[in-house]
Image 1 (cartoon, rainbow, N blue to C red):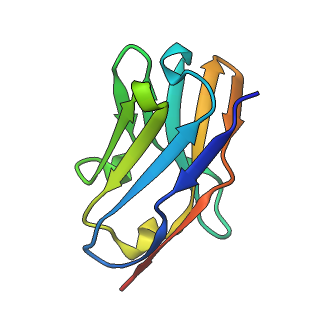
Image 2 (spheres, one colour):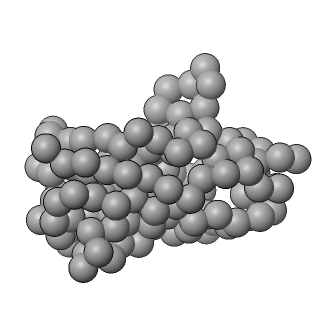
Length: 116
């Protein structure tokens, strides 16, 4: 069992920045991937950014150039730096740990609200 605790959400004006953090109870360098997903009201949960254990990353087209995922393996923590935030970024953001392909855990989510 892997526990994930997100932090860093909040209310920010459009154009502002926030940094989310996700602290994991396991050794994230042994996991296949760590990622951030988000879910806005009425929408399905969608991938925002993903960091694979080999070092590669991938991003949703809507956040490329604005969001950056990073990890500190020593602290078992993954971050999502969000800049140039837009109202459409408003959602609950969830941390995801993919231990192996198909076997994963979710955090409880943190609310991000971007005002126009």
